[in-house]
Image (cartoon, rainbow, N blue to C red; front, side):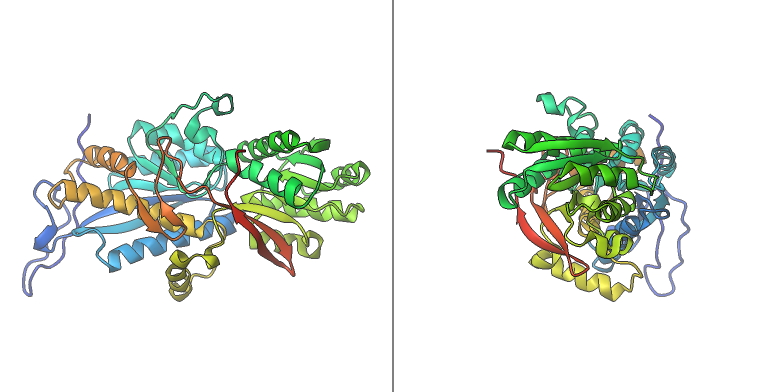
Length: 413
């Protein structure tokens, strides 16, 4: 193992004392009561540009708020946290490059992100090989934590470094199916997905549960997520007489898809997962997406006492863009890494190990036992690294806003 020491940034201890240079290792700059501070970095990977940048910026800003809060409150004595944000543009290859860059930074002790499940897949092995903990606020594809054969009951955790604060499509898809079939009494579905890991997987779990309940699939289609002309699909949906369309995909294609289905003469609402739960979906689709539905992870933040301080502080911080669907989960993901670092510091007599490889390994191990009351409720992880919080919500577009219509957990029957 190659031993690498984190740089130590020090502050003036007393008036007139010399300011020490940033060059020592943890072995001789222990921090603690001396007033010296170790600066460590938490990385954030998300799509900060491109079609999904609204969600990515919300992730970045919320993680930034967690860092600022920890530093302000001296959450981990002797440690100052710093954020490094990288743009993956929702591309798997770019995400993998970013993972390699973060691993190569000797100050990085954990990473928040990414947004997209297919990007998460590309990063897992890089982080796993380096024992660098990764906590995603938004990945929902079950195979990332439970392996490729999870649907057969063969669940296997592939990377001990991978965690997430959002629940998975193993429950999100079926939860939507139960709501539509049992509560809305909608029996005929037209299923569309964008062929990506998230979209295809979500559509699959929805379809399985919907059929099990007695629902009928009257048509299926796959679209290219980069396309914006869906008029042919819209015509097929209108002819199918479907009660609704279930779309496994993201809002940049989902909004025009819905609008063109409406223009084709269909009154079927479009229903999707958390990647449609964005203000951008309504901005893009305008009045044509009125009545559409989306599920999202957790309960609406405005209904949670635990989220009040977060929402107040986010507004006070003056971020230009909203925290969006994953803001609370991004804050909690960042805070989980901070708490893991805190546990390591307390275990090591008030300081982090002098070697970055040891630090990363210990932070990853500590993450498994992290538990706290977060913005989104109780934050903790099961043996697969998945969140123990299985709550989900259904939102309907009403008056140009996503309004919550149901919150609960998936009934496995």
